[in-house]
Image (cartoon, rainbow, N blue to C red; front, side, top):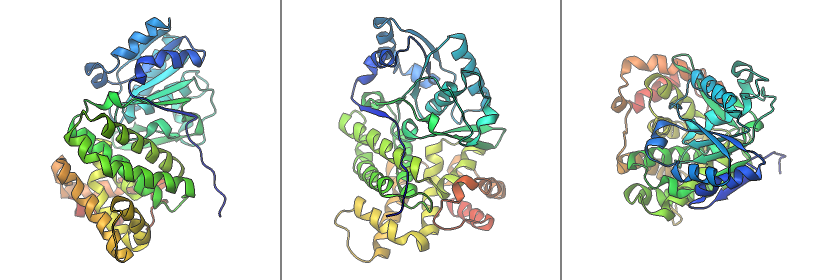
Length: 383
């Protein structure tokens, strides 16, 4: 067996209703002044209400920074760091979707003032120290609570990543009750996002290992078995918990066996057209899977056996079953299926393809090399 390393969040708590007792987790970290990082939607949905009540009970000072935007720009990070410093926060809680959790990671890292945001872009540029950090996902998709990466929108159409083990939180708290009110369209897009994480981790050309493989397979099993129920019967707590756990397992997988072509082509769609990350991945998934088939057929067949336990036939037939299943899934779940559905035209393809080629950190993981002409063809296919 080849040597490999595997890293993930130190403590993962899976418990419906656990957010109502989060202040006790803060006290266990020996902290007494918390900044909660979230977005306006979480506040409007009153998801924070029970958590906030627990801080009063445990005599923990709490402040809320709720200005997180999807695909957060640098200005959101800077404002959050300032909020943490003003509050004298000694603990940061990211409470929301991937954007809120990513912003919380960076605030926890930058609040000391020892480094600036531009200094930590890239891999292992962050030096610390980091404030204690708790992440609480309210969607089942990004797996950010178990990944050592945070994505920032820099400039008008570009994203950069901060990659460091320091971004792994002290605690990931998975409370499925927080996801019960998610609209079906959000559930579908974030669920497919998690599936993409599992698939790309399993087929990654770099750093794929037995642990990431096992997690990716079980993640896909949980997600495929529960996504329809979670979308159609949103109050089903068991389906919601399985989706949340599946997204977490997929996050652990791709945090160690990094994602590839789907994400590389999805990022420009999100950056240029402000399409949510999960939907961007969903729109590019089918074309990239078909493009990768010559190099990933055997691995796709193995994943098909997870989705269809009774599947039989050649690896080519089973691999195509997986591709067909994933290609049909967005339409079955009622979300956009074509780039034109989100306002993209043929005139945008050249710029999108050029932007995709900048995602070298992701492209090197794809099982088949994607060149500029390939990217343009894939966008045309998705149009």
